[in-house]
Image (tube, one colour):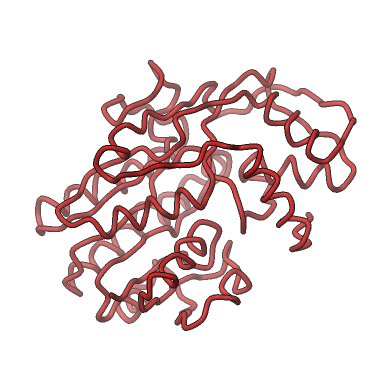
Length: 310
């Protein structure tokens, strides 16, 4: 089997590449290295890294030649980033995804595993959130990821494809570096390792379903390897914790005693988010690890060893 991983030098993509390598896939990675790092692929033998962009149709067509499956992870990621530049967000996440779909169609590739986001839901009307929950995205990012989903599902009907859309909740883990627009876990880790206090937007009682990247990567593999499977799946743990508990857990791991600073809530962020993953469990045999304490210890050890400080 030959797989194209678009965004494969990035955080989640590189973890997918690791599993594909262990399963003896022939692997092509297409990445513009805007948020990806060649170093993420250094220890993975036999990967063909092509530096290119999903905005360039020739890059896509060349990378996808003779491939059986595409994992599409390239995106402009983050609510705040999309609020600051919604046009760029749509060009990358909507037009870029259309380019990927057209590339697959022209190469007769029947399955794309598309990385979507719980941001499509907006503030939930009920919890846990199942796949039938209504859509009310609070940011251009959520809108663009939803549009990508709809295009993937449309291509299933029009062109006899089996595209799968995975709606990630809050992903963290190895190869996730500090980004002021990014996930709260590397931000908290970076602040504390730089002897700075954690800053929390709002009262810290907002809740999130944090899922380790190894589980997300395996969900991608399961979705890719099951024939006759298409549609949308929530990918989380089915368990949520408050940001206050998360912050204190990281502080305890690092034996930190600095005060937590609270500030006004940010625009475009939901208060509560919890995944119903029963569909993924039943159809994909998805079985995530929910031991966040052990996973955080592993992540912080990696962060220190990689010298990934901001």
